Length: 369
Image (cartoon, rainbow, N blue to C red; front, top):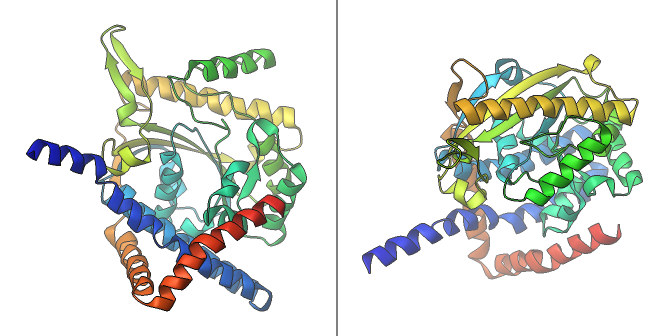
């Protein structure tokens, strides 16, 4: 009985963090809709400031469970000191292997107190997520289809909005388009054939990056960005010894639940700063070749990680992700506001109305707008 209880606890202890993180969503969603309703009468700087505050507030709650509670630490190599001392508009490109990669972006941004500036270029299907699909769009995230199948006019309009309004931006792109999973060999083989057809070197530890979304971002925002940050991520738990091959091999990266529960708290991050003068933007062919060269470098870094346990020779700096003072107050605030709302009949009515009617209207807006 005791062992059964321990087993059940270990399997379900992710539920409380999930509820605390997700429960404020209807209130956050309603706050954002109110802010957008007032947008025509608010000064643009005031609107953007409040939008960044709301986005940052929720992301800090996420980080409370994904960094402070699970004891996450990052081993940094590369240009991380210059990265953390900067305050600039930047294009952030990264490899992609798990949904936790999204959280890693938050982990880096909170070091600079720039959480509110994060904007993702993400797959179009995410626009149908209740609450957040609409909010991503309202926060000026960029929707694209997988492998170049999307309405470019809408994407270009979103990019122009960022530039024309001079919005402070950390535009984050995962150019592989889907997650690298060493078990999904058919996806890897298909990706390698794509590279072969292009005459490019075949990647062993990454999928061949797709360049259309990257080209549009660079073509329209090249003058808006100060730098490109080429970020490579590896999770300690993905490096496992194989008796059959007598070497370390790569296994599937941890998902959000496993990571939140502390099963792989150590992350390796290599950061390379690239000046915009060294980044092509006028030709998609040039952008594609440049992007692939970035991933060739990532492939070598990943080979080093699998062989030695680190990206580069020399000692990496291992530091906690965030301070408790950066995340706990926001988590307590969101929890208290949610509980207060649910404590009164009108609050419960408004909460449930936002949950069901608000999320439905948001999905319909994103589908037909």
